[in-house]
Length: 293
Image (cartoon, rainbow, N blue to C red):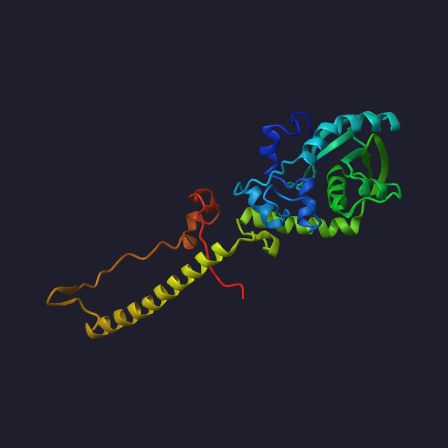
């Protein structure tokens, strides 16, 4: 575990840094357990997370629950400290072996041998904790934190209406093996600028007016496509009649023009060990219209 004591959680530097790593709150998204919705109402998915890491989409969640959680974290930490007698401080840590893994801890002990995760729980989640169980939606987050700290156990602290409940969460090696592999696959998508699979929740539901515009566009595209086929057929006939030579008649000239071929950069020896992605221009966006059924 590597610890960065200079990073302040919530600061712009911290926000910028998180785009370069997979954090603990990203783990439930990658594992498909995320229940939190973006500002536009969609549930956060690996695809929206991928867009976030590349700076293509702002996936920040701003609502009263999030603001309440931030405001109550310190009072909850004080209650935990009174219950356990252990002083805890927020900390940003990094996995010592997997370079893309980091975690922002709500509390790390002074000798760095113990960590906590604090949640401002609703009544249902808090009641579950009384049986020493945690909501599934948080399981990946805590396992990710354990992977980063290297600890065998940590505390989940449920705080509801002034009451705190401590739940011990043990390191789950089988789960971690699956999670880390999925995180590696996701990070490969980020590094290669290749989108992960898109699920149905990644699509925004529109209305009848939008459907009419899409239908009109499809008709126009089909007409253009048919015109292109006619154009290609006439082009081939004209070239065949010209016997592959430049020619003219009346008001038309048909000229054969030779152009240099494109450069195949993959066979240039001097470029063999150079990452050409560093020299790419900014990415472009294209749209594809198709019928869902």
